[in-house]
Amino acid sequence: MENEGNPHCPGDKHEEEERLEKEHFWKIINAFRYYRIYAHERVTRSEKQFQSLPAAHQKLLPNFLPHVKRLRQCIEHNYEILKAIINNCNHMFENKEYGVIDMEADLGQLKPASTFDMDKLKSTIKQFVRDWSDDGKAERDACYRPIIEEIVKHFPPDECNPADMNILVPGAGLGRLAWEIARLGYSCQGNEWSLYMLFCSHFVLNRCTGVNTMTLYPWIHQFSNNKRSADQIRPVHFPDVNSHSLPSHTNFSMTAGDFQEIYTEPNTWDCVATCFFIDTAHNVVDYIETIWKILKHGGIWINLGPLLYHFENMANEKSIELSYEDIRHCILQFGFKIENNLRTEEQKIDNEDHNILLFE
View: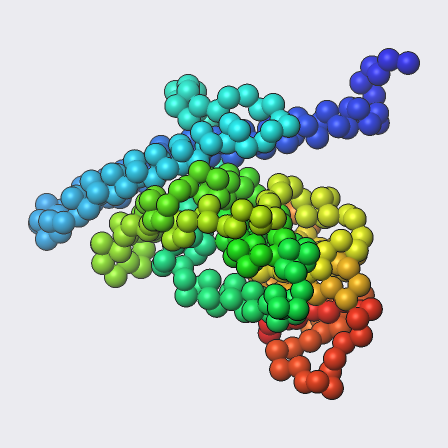
């Protein structure tokens, strides 16, 4: 019988999902394309406010308008980098037909992006600082190094073949933690849902060559709490390492999509490493259950990060905000054994259990 559009037909459901996915894709592209207009409008607002001051007050601030001119130059530079990132997306999704992306096409027809989408884009630009610049080294050392050290401790390269250890990094962001794990020889896969992050990580990992060959101005959108005007236009260079320098035999990949939908096969991963991730859940118990399921017997879950629930204040979004106490209880109920960094020989774990290292 021919499908005439019954909303309960699997085919219609798949088509609707495809439509929504495509719509979301182009919404993110639109935010990248709208960046220049949005950023210049913000600078124009500051310029008009300054010009509304009494002439005597303007005279006391001779450096303000030259600074505004420099801000506009930085916006144009950022936009060129965003164009390169988006133009790279034409070949990013091999099995999708989104059409050719042209950052400059029909700019007169460009729809204004929402404040939410522009905040996401600005946040992603700042993420380059933490993940791929010298400026972010201290933060990476604080967040990523403890996770990497625990991986090496539990899977020592002199006692096992790192390439046989399958490590998953959900919420991989711009991919630096997963890349660092892969650089040590482990088989590592990063997973990310945000297209903002995926577009940018794909650019860094696949299109950037050399060290510090690219420049961004991540702070130009911050008009408050600046000690010096120069701080607002301070450049950040990236990547601080050659992202193509992984050994040729390295098994490293990034996947796009929802963590819970993609990772359903049980007993697959030797280690799940989560950094600033579990509070991105609508229901953190779902994440815990998925991690428990996909870990191999004796596998390790390493977690670091706060409980700043992303959906807490979003209208029409489900959000369960659990305390650490409740999460810890839930973790134990699933069967995890919690280790800490000062584990003694008397606290060795049965190999049939899953372990979790929680950095408290």
